[in-house]
Image 1 (cartoon, one colour):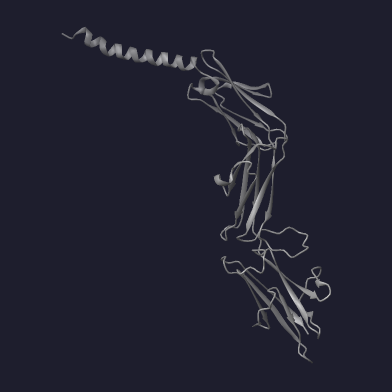
Image 2: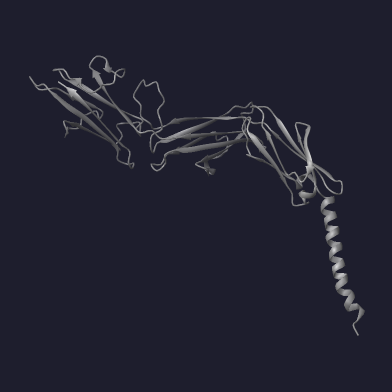
Length: 327
């Protein structure tokens, strides 16, 4: 004979398990709080007028069976079952957009969660710290290969104090360069890089978004130009020497300017500058980038002047230029 207790035991176990699951579900739903709801924005730090996707998630309930309402700036935009994503557009710089989600469970519990978006574009200004340009050059020193670049972030926001900056170089977080008040980032380009992408996101100390910025920089090849130097007026930077420049019988001093070469100090030991006249190396001048030449008496004709400049400490950082001269 089968004992009655042996039959009831499994039934009681199953019944107990079902009751526990039911009570646990009721307990979770009853305790559903705002903190249980995760409301995320993509992108996390939107820019002005950028399309944004808001998404909610929670481990507490099944959102697929829950009434979800999306409210934009206080206006109900969408209300449906299981709508876990919602797209909207950010406003102009320094304008606020409030996105709010309301969740109503099957038991009638209502929980609200909201985020205020106040986008502010961040201007990124840069300078090449070791790019050579001649005196009185009015243009910008371009980024040299393997050169040092400083990028400064300027938020277009009324909130410009007590900010935290997070920097990225080519999608890699730069933790040591990020932090409170660190509104600039300096890096050195690699000879393998054809371009560099620098990004920063700016938040206040409460963690609220202030803005973000991004810039793409590409190194420039050095550009060598020749100039004439007068005894009275010095280097004539206003006129570049072209081919067939005429050298008078009293002689001329030719100045070479290697724009966007690194480093900016041409007298640095790592800079090698070689002059060739008619293909033959000439004795190194006292000033590296100046060569004085004088034709012999009754000598006329043409020749070539060539210069080769190299940074001996950096791979592939070299440039050369040649011009024809007459005398």
